[in-house]
Length: 395
Image (cartoon, rainbow, N blue to C red):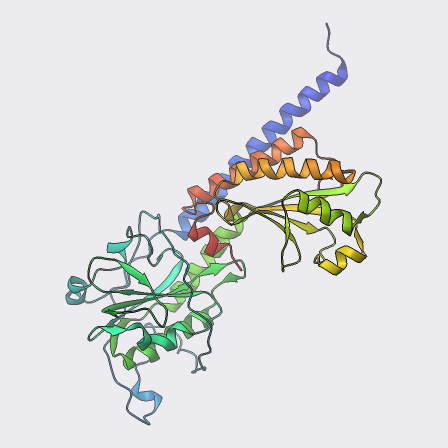
């Protein structure tokens, strides 16, 4: 039986679609690989990084009695600003990097206290690849309450504190009431998230806060190169921008009629979604307790109990956040099925951003993009759904 011209055209179109996706993915992978090499290339050791010895601030003394934190050749640090209270970040990071670099310390101190690189496999620990880290080495062990001012500092980026007791346990995430005394502290400022890279002003303030805290312990510390850390933050942010993929499937009514809010809520809740305070419906994974995907108003207006009762919407979008999922491909498969069922129940159809219907071939191409994005994240040493990914792709 001879093929018709239409059948031949459909076969050719399908082949071209697959080839196009493969070419795009290969180009994207080369582009991202260059970003990875730049973001995670180990920095050269700073042999000249200043080590500031402990100095006590005299009662009623001036700021001149406190060592100022500034790397050689950099601009002066910003003036003092008051510290305000928000709780210390307690997110746990497990750095999978092959190369990590610790803040320089004196040889005598390094013999007594393990560096960050020494304990990188200990589980919860600082992450030198995505955080600016300053270590403090008190003259004698002190309690976590002694660094309360640092624990409650607001710097515009997540700040985590760790302590080390020198007993082989590794790094301990700190809060003001963490029991025991510590012979080393690590202050860790996240270099980038979805709000952008840490700015030079934020990093200078971070260094100044540690510089004002150190003499109160007293403790020695090594000042960071603020300009180098700023450049590293910008490079990391650029990498994350390339790897940041969110997939949306839109449902609209076939007859272009609005979807009643009361019906939408009933269908969403029957499908396992729960209305969240953020104005969307979340589908929560029962095993992990994390959000697999969410349902948003296509009009970019939040859903509320009142709005769902009184109004209608022209459509909804099911959204999947690839970097924040441990298994993005399998989760996409579940979201696709949920979207198809919901579209059928609502009398609607799945469409793309240009309101074109999404058939199985188009959905298969989107799935391939999800798989490629997840692979790119893993090759960038950012495992999807890992604590590192949750930090970089948060806020």
